[in-house]
Every structure is written in structure tokens, then in C-alpha cells.
Length: 152
Image (cartoon, rainbow, N blue to C red; front, top):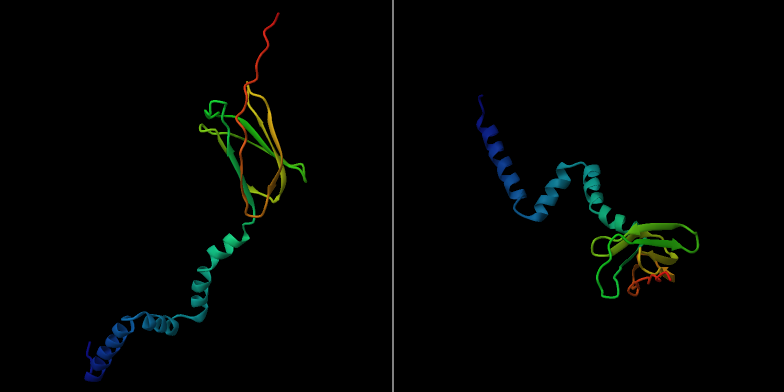
């Protein structure tokens, strides 16, 4: 292609302006504002606020704990029931190998917890208050062994 001297001069000036534009953050923002449509820039800025808005919408709490025997050994596979005393809705979970259980996304309200394990006495705790975004740990006393009576 044939270029005139004026075209070559214009091209060199254009390149030097673009390089200078990227030498500082302020120039980068000026460049983006001038080159991007305002709607695209608005979308990009709006995406920054999604994590903040998502966290603000989560109001539910959590109830957790662990189950042990009198020697403080963990008891696995124990049925743990959490019941909302206001609505009557009950949810049951099983403890893991470490004897731990967790109920996530619990609505605020007053609950009772029931723990039942084969060979142990039933454990029940009433009036557990869960507040918005509350984290409640139920400290159940060690489950006591159920003694079998010998037949006479």
C-alpha cells in the first residue's frame, strides 16, 4: 500500500496516544469510558455488587452439634430430629463418623431437638431459639446407655 507522509504521521501519533493512555489507572478508566458503551460499563459495575446482594438475602440460621457417649467417644449414624414448635415441621439428619450433625438454612423460630440412638436413652431439648442468621450449637449431655434388665 502507498501511504502518504501525513498518514504515517497520523498513525504514529495515534499509537503514542494509546500507549500513554494505558500508563495509569486514571487513563485506563478514561479510555474505557470513551471506548465502551455506557450500558456495558454499567453492567460490569453492577456485577461487582452481586455477591453483596446475595449475602444480604440469606437470613436463615444453622443448628449443629455432636453426639458422644459417657466416655466422650463419638457416636455415628445417630438420628437427630429438629422440630419447629411453631409450625410442627420436623427434619431428621444422621450424625457422621465424628458424631457431628448440622441443620443448615433453618428458619427463625423456636425448636426442639430429639436424639435417638440404639442402646441409648432418648435425649430431648426444648425451646431452642434460632434467630435470623443465628448459629446455634446444641450442647447435648453425653447419651446414657440404656441398661437391659436380666430375665428372671
